[in-house]
Image (tube, rainbow, N blue to C red):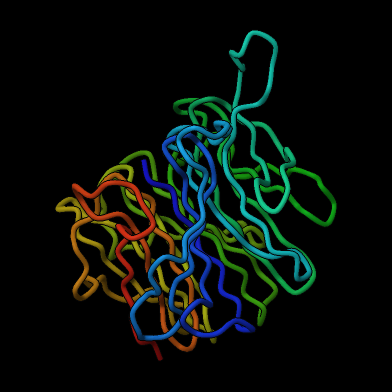
Length: 289
């Protein structure tokens, strides 16, 4: 599976202001610079290890996520821990850029991560447990502690996750896919409220989930049973209708990542039948507001 996540740096020139991180066939992390405006992406601005270099430790089918802890940018993945015999009993949730550090552990079945951040803290979300017993967990960068939520609830094992922080109400949210019916659900980690996002009833099982929040609105991206990319917007506390993202090709075996830059949502994923590489990712730009 193609894993992908993006970081926007407003201090860089627009044509290289998005760093698009992705995994390689040798389980390494690579990066390509992308346009944070509406122009074309630059050519030849990607950096990755060659086939003859050391192999990495990113787990196959791991997703990537990225964020910032007090201005410190990082990329998170599910990794294979280094154990005697080479057969770990579980996976590890790890920072893989700019340095490697294990943060928490999970079962072999769960390979999805998401992140949210405030001006003072950052939280990484992942699932633990096995079938019918999936547990949502949160790693807190400020305390280095791990909290558990939704234990024994309706979370699909290895569900993709999307997360964001609401600064107005000081609340954290996670979107996941339910184990029955394939609906996407919103979970508030402060109030513990759990809400069905009704307009996502057409979500395909195992859909990738991507979320960005900007100026009081939240934009949720997922795929339907025809592999079409769709968006649902939350405004004034309510989720709206689901709409197909214009000019978006059908998605392949890929994660989705979205980031807001210059008043635009930048969505990245690998289209169906394309090979993994920095120039193969679709870059969909959606004006918002």
